[in-house]
Length: 287
Image (tube, rainbow, N blue to C red; front, side):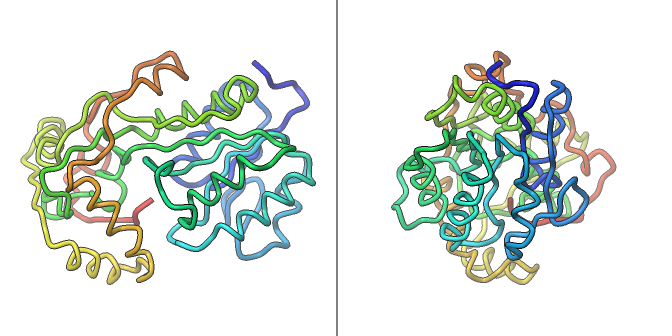
């Protein structure tokens, strides 16, 4: 372990899918952890209220960084936060990005933050670029409605990864920053499956038939916007689904095993939570 007893790790988005699990894993390893979120955490943190930043960062030496969600133009905001983090004494950042972001143009916000981190001399960083989350089938935009998964992904395959495995990778990079400084990892599941294959696997686990229906991408995006997703977020949803549909989704790799020493879980290792009780209501938003 590279960390000392005086180090404190700050976890942003600590009530979210990855942040909550990262905090749990760090706490289980008896690491000093400070959680931050708009509510329900140790520190109140709001990207749009810079008065909350100083108190949130106080005493932190390591940072799990999650960008503002459901936005497409946040690189400048995150950059200013990182400036303040450097002044506060943060020495390492583990950043949650997205699969394939290394090939994105520099003006894409996630990629811009990656490049910003790489250019900073007073702190080290690790980038995590996960595949689509397995938990999206039970918690957010892939959750079946009337036992049907509807998403414009065609017959493309994706190596869905468990959020637990993403959190495990993140926790290791935060507790062993010298080992993982300057590295980028792309956590995936052990196999790439189509949506139809995923539906069949989930059906077997849930004990009832779950089907998949491809749909028109623009109609699907309009439906997502009607549920409260910002209209500008279509610029994320469109390539996100088109990449999988075109056959360029995430492919399995050994990053989870390499970093954690444990193989990634399969889809599904158990019936997804809401499916156990037969719920057909979609909740939440894309992560």
